Length: 75
Image (tube, rainbow, N blue to C red; front, side, top):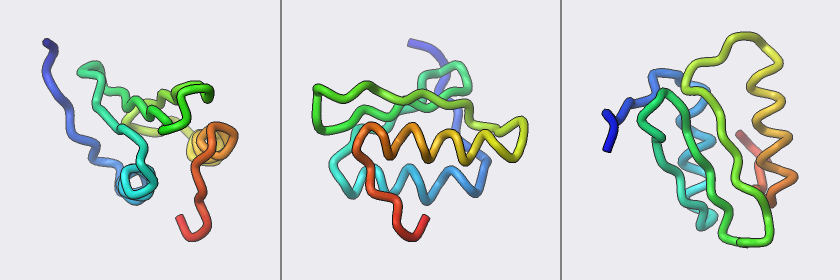
């Protein structure tokens, strides 16, 4: 298995924590990406890089997670 990277992005940590609290499985892929697996298997998984290249990346990630069922009220 590949090397596990830890996210240094402070904006990603609360999202990962919120997802885990809601029953999501959150794993580091080993290639500087994070995989979010929703508890509802009919919803697609969401992948993102551990570093964000621009301002829209975080907003797009949150939108994708919401479409897959994650509730992000205060994150």
